[in-house]
Picture 1 (tube, one colour):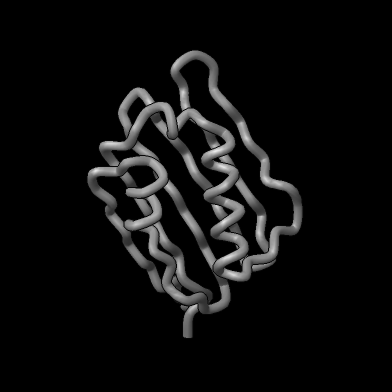
Picture 2 (picture 1 turned 120 degrees about the vertical axis):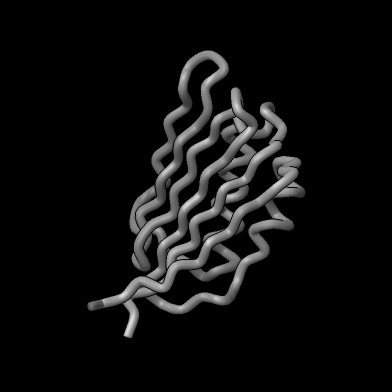
Length: 115
Protein backbone atom coordinates (compact mmCIF):
# COMPACT_ATOMS: atom_id res chain seq x y z
CA UNK A 1 0.00 0.00 0.00
CA UNK A 2 1.31 3.45 -0.89
CA UNK A 3 0.70 6.96 0.37
CA UNK A 4 0.93 8.24 -3.20
CA UNK A 5 3.28 9.02 -6.04
CA UNK A 6 5.90 11.70 -6.27
CA UNK A 7 7.27 13.02 -9.54
CA UNK A 8 10.76 14.50 -9.26
CA UNK A 9 11.66 16.28 -12.48
CA UNK A 10 14.91 18.02 -13.42
CA UNK A 11 15.26 19.85 -16.73
CA UNK A 12 18.57 21.13 -18.09
CA UNK A 13 19.64 23.19 -21.07
CA UNK A 14 16.61 25.47 -20.66
CA UNK A 15 16.21 28.98 -22.04
CA UNK A 16 17.13 31.37 -19.19
CA UNK A 17 14.49 33.94 -20.18
CA UNK A 18 11.64 31.45 -19.80
CA UNK A 19 13.04 30.26 -16.46
CA UNK A 20 12.83 33.86 -15.19
CA UNK A 21 9.31 34.42 -16.57
CA UNK A 22 6.59 34.30 -13.94
CA UNK A 23 3.79 34.12 -16.56
CA UNK A 24 5.40 31.05 -18.17
CA UNK A 25 5.63 29.30 -14.79
CA UNK A 26 2.09 30.30 -13.81
CA UNK A 27 0.81 28.82 -17.07
CA UNK A 28 2.72 25.59 -16.37
CA UNK A 29 1.11 25.31 -12.93
CA UNK A 30 -2.35 26.18 -14.27
CA UNK A 31 -2.05 23.45 -16.91
CA UNK A 32 -0.77 20.84 -14.44
CA UNK A 33 -3.62 21.60 -12.03
CA UNK A 34 -6.28 21.48 -14.76
CA UNK A 35 -5.00 18.48 -16.72
CA UNK A 36 -4.32 16.32 -13.64
CA UNK A 37 -7.53 17.41 -11.85
CA UNK A 38 -5.61 18.73 -8.85
CA UNK A 39 -7.24 20.80 -6.10
CA UNK A 40 -5.30 23.81 -4.75
CA UNK A 41 -6.31 24.74 -1.20
CA UNK A 42 -4.76 28.22 -1.45
CA UNK A 43 -3.31 30.45 -4.16
CA UNK A 44 0.17 29.58 -5.39
CA UNK A 45 2.92 31.39 -3.52
CA UNK A 46 5.65 32.75 -5.83
CA UNK A 47 9.02 34.26 -4.99
CA UNK A 48 11.12 35.88 -7.69
CA UNK A 49 14.77 36.32 -6.75
CA UNK A 50 16.49 39.60 -7.70
CA UNK A 51 18.88 40.09 -10.57
CA UNK A 52 19.45 37.10 -12.79
CA UNK A 53 17.94 34.84 -10.12
CA UNK A 54 15.14 32.38 -10.65
CA UNK A 55 11.69 31.78 -9.31
CA UNK A 56 10.33 29.46 -6.65
CA UNK A 57 6.67 28.48 -6.63
CA UNK A 58 4.61 26.35 -4.28
CA UNK A 59 0.99 25.26 -4.49
CA UNK A 60 -0.50 23.46 -1.52
CA UNK A 61 -2.89 20.83 -2.89
CA UNK A 62 -5.64 18.79 -1.30
CA UNK A 63 -3.60 15.92 -2.80
CA UNK A 64 -0.30 17.28 -1.35
CA UNK A 65 1.93 19.80 -3.19
CA UNK A 66 3.38 21.13 -6.43
CA UNK A 67 6.71 23.00 -6.31
CA UNK A 68 9.19 24.46 -8.77
CA UNK A 69 12.61 26.08 -8.50
CA UNK A 70 14.28 27.68 -11.52
CA UNK A 71 17.93 28.58 -11.99
CA UNK A 72 18.28 30.76 -15.10
CA UNK A 73 21.97 31.25 -14.46
CA UNK A 74 22.41 27.48 -14.91
CA UNK A 75 19.58 26.85 -17.40
CA UNK A 76 17.88 24.39 -15.05
CA UNK A 77 14.48 23.78 -13.54
CA UNK A 78 13.52 21.43 -10.69
CA UNK A 79 9.88 20.44 -10.28
CA UNK A 80 8.20 18.24 -7.69
CA UNK A 81 4.61 16.97 -7.63
CA UNK A 82 3.36 14.74 -4.84
CA UNK A 83 -0.14 13.24 -5.05
CA UNK A 84 -1.69 11.00 -2.44
CA UNK A 85 -4.22 9.76 -5.02
CA UNK A 86 -3.35 8.06 -8.32
CA UNK A 87 -3.01 10.34 -11.35
CA UNK A 88 -2.53 9.65 -15.01
CA UNK A 89 0.96 10.29 -16.35
CA UNK A 90 1.66 13.82 -17.58
CA UNK A 91 3.96 14.61 -20.51
CA UNK A 92 6.63 16.30 -18.39
CA UNK A 93 9.43 15.80 -20.94
CA UNK A 94 7.45 17.10 -23.92
CA UNK A 95 5.98 20.02 -21.97
CA UNK A 96 9.25 21.19 -20.44
CA UNK A 97 11.00 20.86 -23.80
CA UNK A 98 8.26 22.90 -25.48
CA UNK A 99 7.86 25.56 -22.78
CA UNK A 100 11.47 26.02 -21.66
CA UNK A 101 13.55 24.60 -24.50
CA UNK A 102 14.93 21.88 -22.22
CA UNK A 103 17.62 19.80 -23.90
CA UNK A 104 17.29 17.04 -21.29
CA UNK A 105 14.61 16.06 -18.79
CA UNK A 106 15.21 13.57 -15.99
CA UNK A 107 11.93 12.19 -14.62
CA UNK A 108 11.76 9.99 -11.55
CA UNK A 109 8.50 8.53 -10.25
CA UNK A 110 8.60 7.47 -6.62
CA UNK A 111 5.95 5.27 -5.08
CA UNK A 112 5.74 6.50 -1.48
CA UNK A 113 5.23 3.69 1.02
CA UNK A 114 3.05 3.81 4.13
CA UNK A 115 5.44 1.50 5.95
